[in-house]
Image 1 (tube, rainbow, N blue to C red):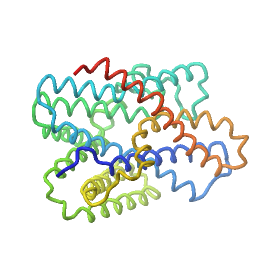
Image 2: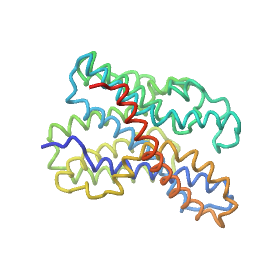
Image 3: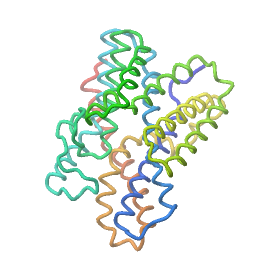
Image 4: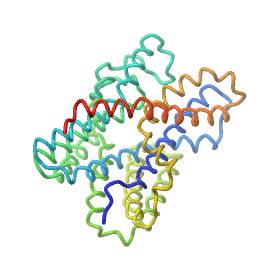
Length: 336
């Protein structure tokens, strides 16, 4: 019997969040400690591949969680509300604070945030300008995917129509496009489609016997793409290869969950539940913590503190802000 909640993927979400935090912590450490060089931090820079995991996982989770929803107006309303609340309720407080901070103290961010888009920052609409929250560009991709999947599932009543999205993505992949257009037809969207695809395969159980081979193959592909990234500038191809690797891994591990009880990994499950909060909070947290770099003797200690404290702040935000706000919003907007 297939599980509705997959603890293994929640653990993967925790590890991906830590990887992304490590990437930005390595950037901050090298920025404030100019002498830091070498392969040690270079490995942590590979943490940006965690975003590829999140994209593939989003496709899988959305396809997995909507299978039991009715294809009618009530189901569509519930889907749109749940997705909107899940994204915007934890995000908006961080975005509003960052907009205010960047307006008053532009230097608070290490990244170039000049001329950020207010509409893009608040509503995650595709824009030619950056967002106030550095990582919000990934959420702009997510919003587009949720809308298109919802149209295919509830209006066209066939989630397989989402694969038609590949046509404009592949047709326009060789042309220079304005920044906002990449959120609609950029090759990064293929990773969402990979997630939807492996969800369909997961529910057929056809590859169950190959679960360990799939997981191992996925890890090998991710390692290969990571090695390529150290010596190549072909970022889109590398990230697609990483997406395929994570797709194999997620499919394999989802099946492996029938053999292993992942629910005992409580700390990782907590970090997985708090992964969105960690993802949102870690950028501003590292920016603020880095201003106290003069109190830390070297960059390696600073890097460690950036990772630990950012994750801790993310868990705090999840427990004391995200959960209460989401519960209140659901009571108000979703009436059973």
